[in-house]
Every structure is written in C-alpha cells, then in structure tokens.
Length: 149
Image (cartoon, rainbow, N blue to C red; front, side):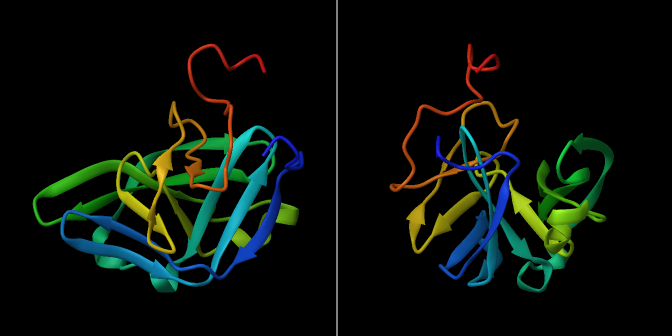
C-alpha cells in the first residue's frame, strides 16, 4: 500500500465482492474497480448494474476529490433501517477516472463488505473508506495522528 501510486490508479478486479445490510444482499459482483492510492487501503467501486437500486436513496450534499471530482452520497435503506451516507459515487468523474462513472463505493464501517468471502475491516476514520483484507498491511492513514503523513 505504501507503494501504491499518487495520483491514484484504477484496477479491474474480478474477485467476488458482496455488500450486505441486515439480511439483505445490497450488491454482488465480480466486476469491481479498485482505487489504489499511497498510504490507503484500496476502495472497491461496484458497477451499478450489480447493486440493488431499491436499497439506495440519494443523500443531499457533496464533497470534492482533487483526482476524481465531486462525490455524491447514498443512504442504504432496508425496510425501516437506514444507514446514512453508506455509499458514494462520482456521477461525472474527472479525466483518468472516467471509468468510475456508473459505480458505487460502500463504507465497510456502515455495511458488511466481503471479498471472496473474507469479511472486510474498515479503514479507521472513514474519511477514505478503505477496505482492509488479509493482503493489505498498514499502517494506514485515517486514524488519529495520521493526517500529517
């Protein structure tokens, strides 16, 4: 991860990625894109076609990434349960990140994420939304005292 590039790089990933909330599978794909960026665990972006749109609700507000552009946010809604801002997307991603159009990323701190059946650990701090699996080694930016790295 410390040898990941800056600016970030996109890589196709055909591993089995799932996102669940409660008893419902929100997303299931073998066609994700991973964003790799120095000092951060990767973030998996899942194609919208593999996300159950009935569980998503747009959320007001935007943030800006210097590389990818304006991020939009989504609540995950299953029955009466709502996870606010559990996912985000780039509706009009910038230049080299155009492939992210039509994809959503999920915070593993908000919903259950897995890669090839392995539960994902959330990156501390939630700012970056990184997915930590067995092949990813820290330390990671995001926790207390790491902003100046």
